[in-house]
Amino acid sequence: MILVYTGNGKGKTSACVGQTVRALGQGLRVAFGQFMKQDGQAGEQAQLARWLGQSFCAGGQGFLLREEDRPRHRAAAGQLLAWAHRQLPHVDMLVLDESLYALQNGLLRREELETLMRLAREQGRHLVLSGRGAPDWLVEAADLVTDMGEVKHPWQTGVKATPGIEF
Ligand code: ATP
Ligand code: MG
Image 1 (cartoon, rainbow, N blue to C red):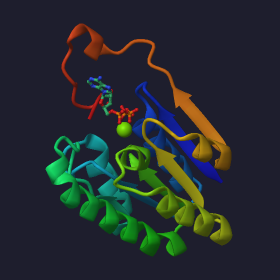
Image 2 (cartoon, helix red, strand yellow; image 1 turned 45 degrees about the horizontal axis):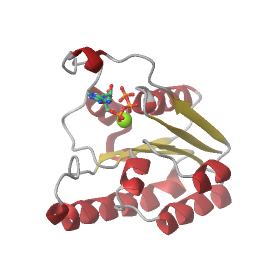
Image 3 (cartoon, rainbow, N blue to C red; image 1 turned 90 degrees about the horizontal axis):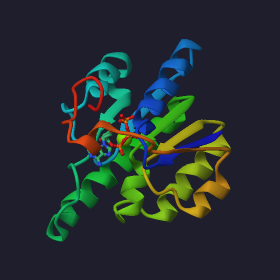
C-alpha cells in the first residue's frame, strides 16, 4: 500500500512514527528515512535509531532558505534516495518522512518518487510518504491519503516549540 500524510496541520511525522510502531509490533521490518531534517534535533530520531539502527536515516540539511544552498540540499536528498533504494528490498515498510516537502522544493523529482512507488508495488512493500502539499498525481496514485487540517496550534499564540511535542 502507498500511504500519504499531508496537509498543514500537525501530525504528519507523528503519524509516520505511529505507523512504524504498529508495523514493528506486527513483526514487520521497517526502514524510516527523513528528508530535509538533520539528525539529532527531534525526539523521534533518537528513538527510531534505537529501534531501527541502520534502517533509520535522517539525511537532510534543514530548511532550504537560500537558493545558493540548493546543490548541498539536492546532494543530501540524492543520498537519502539511494539509501531508500538500498533499504527497500529488505523491509516490509519504507517510511519517507518529509519526502513531499522535498518534492515541493524540487529536491526530489516526481520521476524519482514514481520509480520508488513502482518498485514498492512490484516488491509488495508498504510505502509511507509525508509532508505538506501532496500533489494531485500522488493523491491519485496512493491507496490512503490523510490531509491533516490545522484547527488550532500553539504557535498561533506565540508559544515556542515544545520538546516532546513539536520535536
Ligand atoms: P509532527 O512532527 O508534530 O507530527 P508535522 O510533521 O505534521 O508534525 P511539520 O509540517 O513537519 O509537521 O512541522 C514540523 C513541526 O513544526 C511540527 O511539530 C509542527 O507542530 C511545527 N509547526 C508546524 N507549523 C508551524 C508553524 N507555522 N510555526 C511553528 N511551528 C510549526
Ligand atoms: Mg513533519
